[in-house]
Amino acid sequence: MVNSEPGPLWSGDAHGRGNSRREQVADQIKQLIIRNRMRPGDLLPTEGELCDVLHASRSSVREAVKMLNALDIVEVRHGHGTYVGGMSLGPLVESLTFRGFLSRDDDHRVMSELVDVRDTLEQGFAESIVEALTDEQGERLATTADKMLTRARAGQEFIDLDRDFHLALMQELGNQLLLQLTGAFWEVHAAAAPTLGHAAGQLEETAIAHVRIAEAVRAKDVPAVREAIAAHYVPIRSTIAQFHRRA
Amino acid sequence: MVNSEPGPLWSGDAHGRGNSRREQVADQIKQLIIRNRMRPGDLLPTEGELCDVLHASRSSVREAVKMLNALDIVEVRHGHGTYVGGMSLGPLVESLTFRGFLSRDDDHRVMSELVDVRDTLEQGFAESIVEALTDEQGERLATTADKMLTRARAGQEFIDLDRDFHLALMQELGNQLLLQLTGAFWEVHAAAAPTLGHAAGQLEETAIAHVRIAEAVRAKDVPAVREAIAAHYVPIRSTIAQFHRRA
DNA sequence: CTGTATTTGTCCGTATGTATG
DNA sequence: GCATACATACGGACAAATACA
Image (tube, rainbow over all chains, first blue to last red; front, side, top):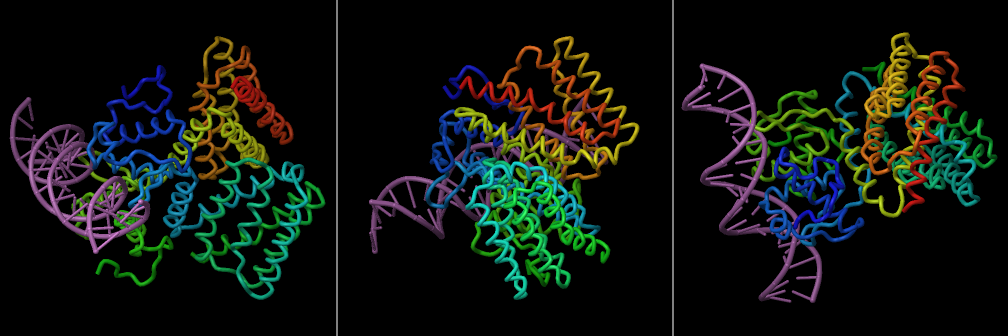
């Protein structure tokens, strides 16, 4: 009754006995979502119903739901109910930021590695970015970069604009995974940035680097885009290295 | 009493009252790990001790621990204790594979996007790979690729060898994040591969592509490496596209 | 090998907080 | 204000797994 479909459909041990009760329940909830073709935002059965259907106690169901909640597979709203989650990369952000804080003592290896990956991804997709460029996107990049420059010259931070810029770069590619990875990696970097501090004049340097990227993209000059992106990460790398030397 | 340290140290809302009990407890456990400079594998207090120290019921502590367990921040062993987890990217794999199964109906967008990211990452790091190449790594790549070829000609699968190959590519770079991302992305792909099926002769084509990559890497010919990697993903992309057309 | 202690796993009952009507 | 439905939180009891004497 519980499993009416023919094949296993879900490879992860299905609901084999080897796992603990809550693991089985978690797997069964995932199967429930898949079988019913549910989408993010859809309402799941209540805890009590899940207890009945899955023949498990409240504790097991609750712990299973909390695990899935941590993975953003389900979303729980107090007094409302449990819904299918957004399946975002929030868990990745959480895990990576925590790792960053753990390795903060010896050096900033995690941050350094993260910058390398970001740099490589943006340079690697430079050609596709230029190809998929639309006029609106070009203007948006330019205006965002300009705002960064004015803020930098006023001595103000522009973290939000930085996020907008890097997300806008990847926007038109239509690759949702890449877009979410970009956002996730940026968030990890932003979470660790306050502990790094800033060198004098680095703010304006970073803003100008963004302006150069926007110009190169609008000019559809792929090598220039790659160079501008590489240059953009130079001050960031030096900040990380500086912090590493201090410790 | 509970929080004797001066600063917040952890940005994530610290342990503000706005969150639920288990969120507070989870944050406090994370702080505990950071404050005590604990490393993966270290033993955490027992559930009972956590209840005492954090002034929470056992249910709340357990749900918090299960959330952290889902993120691989802690690892629980039945009858033994709770330990600091490996902070692996397992959660990312779980989330992405689940998303892949969800979008399996309409098309294989997730898989397609994943291949694009993998391709870009490997091509982007091609130069660094060649630079960091050691003799042992070169031989390992070659022998792995050869094994793939012999297996392919015997009509056998070689998923494990494929994993070894792509991990070996990134091994010498010393970028742990990149290495784990590679492993995670490969796992997601492997989880979805069985549903895709194989075209005739595609096995050997893939094996040969790996041989070509190994040769180009050993020849330290960066453009050839990039081409070989690109060629390697061609049959994979066609398989995904074929599946998409069938549905 | 046999208990015993420790620790996590599971289940139950009850009370509280939250949102809807 | 009240009733209903839901998630939240707590504490207790017993089972299962592991380690050790």
